[in-house]
Length: 113
Image (cartoon, rainbow, N blue to C red; front, side, top):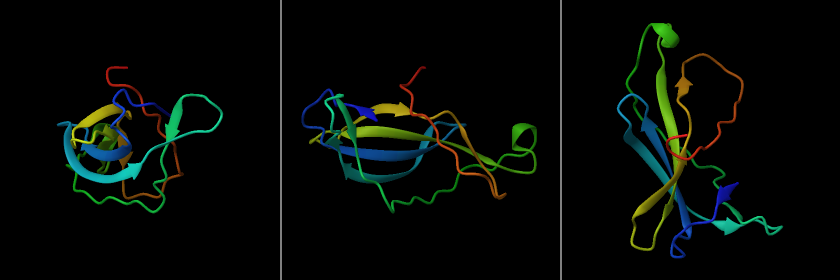
């Protein structure tokens, strides 16, 4: 569930993987066609089935990273017709390790919340 774009030319979504420590872009995937959800709730969705991204994030040790982990964030943006990205929101840091973990969902929150 994503909010409608503020710019009507923004018909596509882009997913960006970011390094949490330096907040820099590691990789981008998309664009994906955004379409309004049914039910009149003023929300959009996009089919991203099969989308994958591979990136090298800085490996950290100690503290929450324990034996080694990478911390990334996922940002979602609308792409305007001009190619400019309007960020909708971003996840809290996601810990990526080599150990098997249960699948988890992360909320996309507006920047600064």
